[in-house]
Image 1 (spheres, rainbow over the protein chains, first blue to last red):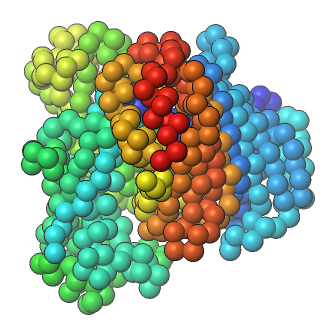
Image 2: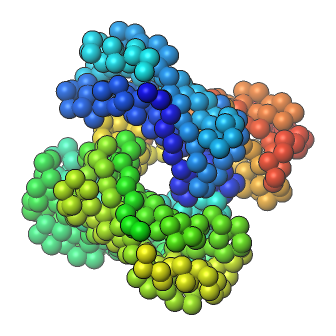
Image 3: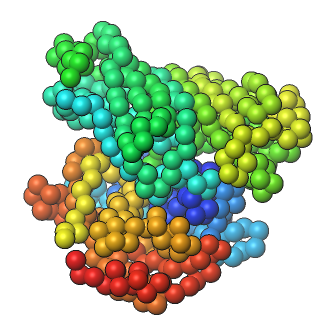
Length: 133
Length: 133
Length: 133
Length: 133
């Protein structure tokens, strides 16, 4: 099982400097996280259907190399830490053609119920996330 | 009462051609519509609190002149037609400094309840929308 | 050659009504158009490298059915009309699982040079676009 | 001179959890940074016209409280550090009505020329940024 997801930069994700606007990397991170979870049998849309929500409480990104429209990106996701309520994901974005590093970052997510109150991550979710793949 | 709203183009709204990415005009239209309603005592966020939702069923835009980062835009909104369930808004986007036309368009919205079923626009809403200002 | 492209709805593309925010359909249309062109040997990024730009001059969408996070969409693109300077694309967005219609629309694009002046579409581009696939 | 900028949450900035999608805070930070600079006589659009670009090299955000559609936000911007090539901005986002903290973060930007090569921040820019207001 690989934890790589590929995506192509969309036109509207670039800005007038010609490169991807920096906020969109958080979206790429989410693509990585979503597929990381799905491949472990933990589709996030199913979690929400069961009343379990993951909200981002911290996000961080370091931008290493400029990419632009139509460039192919590969996003590697690791689950860095699984706590009772919180989980940390680490991301590395590369150009698959050359392996060059484009950006890296992490997000911390907290498990909450439908009204936004913190709740423990379901045990099944914790197991899936700890699964090294 | 004026039906003009001003907004400044954000950096992330431009694309690598240097101008505003075309999809963002639908967001500008929404800014216009939101303030049009608020000025008539019909804050859309209040409507939603009462279980009344307006969903866009048609949108259309004609792009006339290129604008870019930090340009100031004025959005003029008119309520073109108020039906039992549907309402049409017409928009004109200009540069306030010169009055030059930047874009024009319209959206049709349908009134639905929380589960997405069509429902009649509340009478109070219809009156506010018909108010010429 | 098929003119279908599939994409999955991203979390940030939904709004608090629970469905895709209407402006993002113009982005889906662009995904369709980009792949339509690439499959005919006309990568849009190559066109720009040659100083040929396509700017959207009209866009229009009719929304038929609500879709939400993680839903799979298929976008069918047709090139409706190829003029000297302008080209029209027509789009149909469906759920691939059921074939149900989600949205349909069209965009008109004009060919311009790097400084935004209209120019004739290169003959090679016109031929590729007319190619029925 | 105040370093507060106010903005209202747009509908498309919310996601289906009902709150602002986390990536948009980087856009709010940019609104704060843009006005911070403008108020010190350093309009970023003028800088670009002179061939001076600021690219984000690091971004970070901690999310403290949920906000949703139509909520008013105030963004406070501080220039935390001005180096030869890099500049750090710190941001605090609050609800102006209650003063409650919504989010806080920082971005580091590097000065580059039109081809993306690092260059020293112009002396005038450094002085403006150091100006405590």
